[in-house]
Length: 119
Image (cartoon, rainbow, N blue to C red; front, side, top):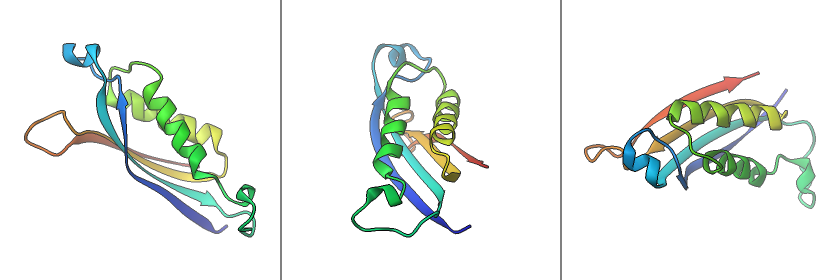
């Protein structure tokens, strides 16, 4: 079956994440990069968004999952995001997600985790 790739580059949001004392008191920025391979099940009709997977829905799910509650570990958060995306979007065949903390260390641009899931 043919697929189409949807991607997000450096989606920026503020999240409550971390185990350090300062991380427990305030939000911190996160960057999310994501790729979705989606089944192409029908011809694209330019006047009907229902003929494609609306990437606004993917974005909303990522933002909500990353901002709805405090999570201690980046590893936990990325697993929760991937699980939700695979559960809520059955047309997604593969997802690759990278979540990074740009302010974690002063001597590097960011530190993060990347995972890939497929069905």
